[in-house]
Image (tube, rainbow, N blue to C red; front, side):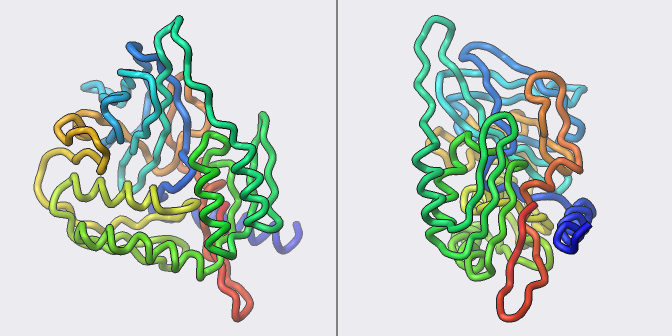
Length: 296
């Protein structure tokens, strides 16, 4: 094994020992459901789940089991945040129109991938049955181009190998900090991950902070969630347009163990520990003066 491969394997194994993963673009999994229909997923560990737009779909944890019931309400896309034991994942839910009605065509990711290649010299990507994307993110323009691409269904978290230069991570953190501070929390990159600290006034505030981490971050980092959550009850609506009363993550429940669903989008699925390493950002000890974090 050459030294670079040995480093990659060693860091991947190290990440399996870390306290969970913070989701960031892209999503971990895309799930299809028809409007007016339901779909079940079997998970291993469940704390809570929150649907970003509850007018599009709902999620319900069935009592006495770890089965997650997804129900399509109207045609459209939304996301669901799944949380357990200090870690979380995000799925995209595609709700198709009822049978016989025309579906809206999916956007073509090719122009966004081309823009990513221009903004990120050396980017390598392949699609098809085994998609992959490898890139070194040295500039903010590259980060923005990849965020636009990864908001599509072209790639999932497990398909990524990203290396982010430290200035890019610092700029990303600077963008996240005001929103987190308004919620009574702060984030910092330490070692091989990000630490989320502070005091959330409610489960809703804690949920909004996790959404902020996802929405404003590129790639994965190991998460150490040190937030103290005040009060009991359910989280809020994740800052989306629908009324907060419709978004009840305690009832829209479900979630994940320390990892992401790899295949299993049709039958029973569990979010197990070893399946997240493809999307992680790692801290790679660099030669001075460059400092980088690498995703696996």
